[in-house]
Length: 621
Image (cartoon, rainbow, N blue to C red; front, side):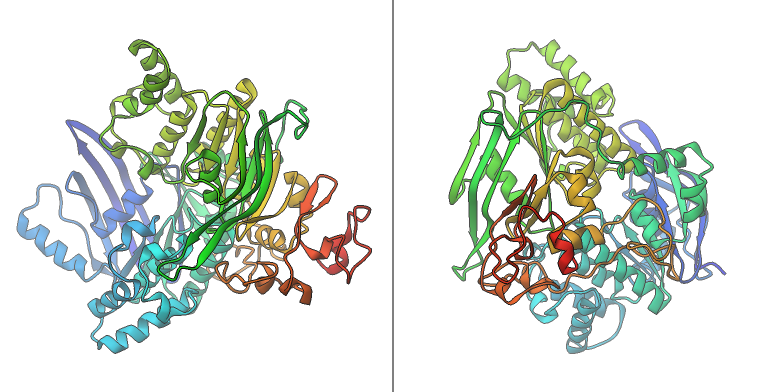
C-alpha cells in the first residue's frame, strides 16, 4: 500500500492576463519507508508540485487533481471555483496534516525560520502545536531533536537567533522543526544546495539514518544528481512540469530512456571531467599579476564580549591576467570575507590588496534574491552599469542587454520582467549577466552556480570559460562544490579558519591531497552517479542506492584553539607540536601546504623536504 498517492496533479499560474502551466498531469506514489528522488531543472515544477500537495501555493495558483491520498485518507484540494466552505474544510484538514503527518524542509532555512525568535522557542512551539505536553517536556524534546540532527550544545543553541548560526546549522534547525511533529513523510526541497561538502555529507547521512531508524518516508527534491544518487533508490525526472521518466537511480544513470534524462546525466558527468585549457600561459611572473594579495587579515568583534575573531588570517595569493583561482572551504572559513576584501567592500586590518588592471572589478554574490532590486525590471538592472559608466545610447544599451540575456541562457523578452517572476537559478543568471555587462577585468564569483541545476551550471561554466578566452578576464572563483572549482580553475586554494592551508593545480591537489583537511573535504564529496559498494565514497544501504563519502571530521569548524594549528582539534594526525605552534606555508614545487607533516622545519621529521614529493604517504595521509 502506498503512503502517498498523487493522481493527475495540475497547477496553473495566472499572472497579468498570462497563464503558465507549472505542473501537468503529474502522478506518482511513495511507499512507506521509501526515499524517492525528484530531479529536474529550475522551473521544472518540482517545488511547485510539493507545495501543491501541502496546499501552500498562493491564490494566483489554480490547482486541480483527480486525487491525493495520504495513508488512505483523502487530502485532495477542492477543484477550481469551489465555494468558501469547501476551501475552509480543506484548510482545516491540512492543518492537521502539515507538520504532524507531512513535514517539509525548504531550500533556504532563513526563509522558513523567524529571524526575530530564538531557535529554542521556534522548535518548542512546533512541538506543542502537534502534541500535548508541558513547556519543560517540549524544551527537553527540542534539545533532543537538536542532538539528533547533529547540533552540539543544544541548550546553548536554543538561546540563539537564526542569524547567529551558520548555514549548515540553520538547515539542521529547520530539519529539527520538520521532525518535531514526528511525520510519516518528510519532503526535503533542496536541503543541501547551499551547504559545503562536509555539512552536505552530514545532512545526507542524518536523513539516511532517520529513514532507516524510524521508517519515515521521504521525498528528496534536488537538481543535483549526485545528491539523488547518494540517497534514493527510485527517482522521478520532471521537465516543464511533466514527468518524463521514472525508475531506479541505477537505471537512470546507466541506461536513461528519455533524451532529457540523458542530457542531465551527461552534463552532470562533465563536472567530474578534468579541465581542458586551450592556451598554455604561465602565471605568477613579475609584472604579470592582475591582483596581488599579501598577508591580508580581517577580524570582527563577537557580540558584546569584545573578543575579536579573525575571519581572514594572513592570506597571500596572486591572480594572473586571464587566470582563475578557485577557493574551497567550509561555511564560515572566511571565503566571502576575503572576497569582500578583494573588491574593496571591506578594508583589511593588515596586509595589502593591489589591483593592477585598468578595467572594473565586479562581483557575483551567492544570494541572487538579495542581489537584485525587486522594484527594477531586469532590463533596467542590467542597463544601469552601462548608463553610469559608458556613453552608450539607450538603443545601444538595450541591444547590449538583449545580448547578455541570450548569452546567459535567458530570453530577450525577460528584460521587461521583475526579479520575482524568475526562479532562483534564473535570478543567478541575471546576476552573472549584470556582472559581465560592464566588461570587467576581474570578476569575483562567490558561489555563482550554487542554486543552478546541472545543465545550467554547465552552460554558465562554459560561458565563463568562453568569456575568459575571448577577453582574458580573471576570476576569483569561490565555491563549496569541489568539482565545479576543479572544472574552472587553474589553481585552487583550500581555506580553513581564515587561512589557506593548501594550494596548487587542481589535478594534483585532488589526486593527491597533502593537508589532512583537504583529504577530508575530498572524501566527503559526492561523485556523479551511483558508485559501486566498497569504493571510498559509496556503500550500499537499505533506503537508497549508496551513501555519500560521509568522512567524519570530529568537532566543528568554530571550535578554534587559542594557539597552534587551527585544524589540530579536528585532525586525526595531530602531533603535540600542532597544539603549540602555527605551521607556516611550505612550498614543494608548485604545491604549498601549511602542515607540520610535510614541513621542512619539523624537528621530529627532519627528512621531509623539497626532494620528497611523496612524503605525506609516510604518515598515512
